[in-house]
Amino acid sequence: MPQEPGPETSKETSEETTHQTGQETIWNGDGGGHETGETPLPGIAALVCELRPADDLVDVSTQLRDRVVEILRSQGGEVDPVQGNPDATAALFGPDDGDGAAAWSAVVAAARVRNAVAEVFGETTVRIGVAASGVDLDPASLGLWRTHVVDLATWLQRTAAADEAILNARTH
Image (tube, rainbow, N blue to C red; front, side, top):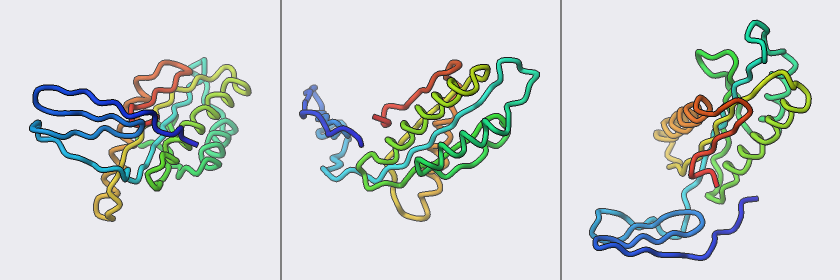
């Protein structure tokens, strides 16, 4: 499970005070910030992975794709293909209760996917992006948050080098 927040620290500037806990940053002061309070927002996370064979002329096996989907689902992910990229798969995790469980599940899934590809299918590389965000559970906005977190994970995946997973700062 996610680690407990660390000790609270604070930094003062001329216009605002920023308090950092292990889970969130709270802004107070004249800088136009806000205080989020101690109750964290529910969270969602997305994982996007792209499988590439060592030889670009060879297709990624159905067996490998099925194994990746199995891993993502075993961690609680809702799996969808990525539009416009037949070599990529996306999974959404959560929403959670604000305890980081969705992000944790996505990170564990990323590690398991990377390990499975390396151990069983050594001639295939994987690039993974994992993004997490706090969300408003209002049904009208939840779809937008889900799209946002998948878009961010897709950008991270495209930035990753072969056999690398990149996480955003919220995925801690």
